[in-house]
Image (tube, rainbow, N blue to C red; front, side, top):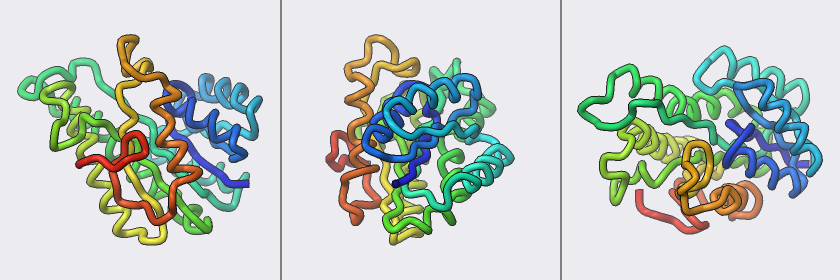
Length: 229
């Protein structure tokens, strides 16, 4: 049975990805910093297959280290890591009025978080025959046709995350490491007016985790197709 860790899996796109991969036969680790919400999600996902809650705050080194130890007590390898956890901070409205602290907080979760978690789990990933890392990014992070002023700290953090993806793909040539833009999805973050369902938002992530060619790496994708950085 293949293993997957999905961060931020207690709701939204992460929850949908976890649920679909459980149904596909993965042992899904439902990563969340909110223990109550994470356990509840894992219990519900377990109705589809095998799911285990893993408490993890991607912005906290100690939490990530503890998560590695707890994961290792259950499984001896990790096949797929989905770095999905992300935030938009209140007040992220205009680049010239965005505080240093707000930018730092956003980068800590959205950019350093995926790097921190990948680095921590890399030895477990190396034990897989076909290790995969999927970073959930955003079209707002595109340098060509990006967000044009919307949520600047968030968008900058996703541009930087795409840089992390390229660097990791180069450093880990036997891995498949990619960024995904799920589109504008109806979640707590995306809002009720978003154009896509969580199922549509999760599709490319699930495909990369389960079906995509292993030699597809170092790319930015939407709807299973490469898009410009």
